[in-house]
Length: 293
Image (cartoon, rainbow, N blue to C red; front, side, top):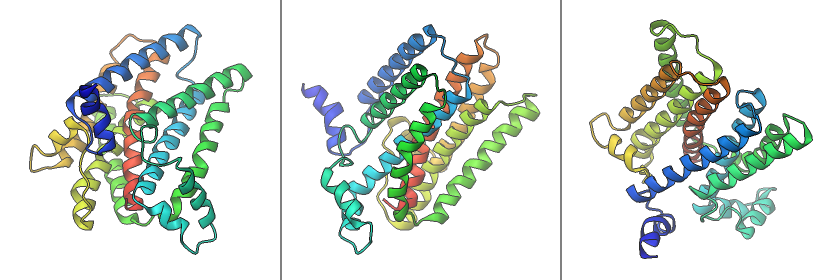
């Protein structure tokens, strides 16, 4: 019990980030869960390369990441502050603050928020299959995300830093596209571009938040992940090296997947997972910076 509390409970309660033990455990659980979900859905002939699956995944990534930002705002006292303001929507924020639904806790931060989001995503896919309405899951995810996004919008202010992160991500992604298409003689699919774009956004947001925004504003941000923290602090390049490695790794995954003899549906799933692993933290970091929490 002491080991579990030290390595899994305390990092969440004390907000100290990840350690080598819980990182490996979470990674193993994620891989195992993904494999079981893949086997289950593949047995039911689910097409991971369908536009409906991609749109649903995108909607729930937006939902989960934006919920995480609202949790950060709540934890920073911004939601309570808005609840006490003279704003006409103050009663709405008061209701949210009083309910505690976005209070910092096991279900509103990693890994809990991703488990909740994944459960809602899979449930929506099951309902869509039962109703024979392919776009139900995407619509459900969008309808869940929209009110959360509207609640976050009033706090958005740091547009210059946000735009910088997006610009750096776009430049990095397009550089990878150019290298693969011109030098690698590949015509990239939307899944391959999303995999690279997601990783580019995560790397760019991390770089701008920690090496630029944090220093300019004096906010005490730090990298919570063990490996990325080591990379960011290893050289004078700072977290720009992390950004470069993320793009290079995504490009390598795309390149070598082309050489694998896999079904189109399975390749699409791998690329979507790579994209999610980039977009989920990248959107959260970029939005959190935009809101200044």
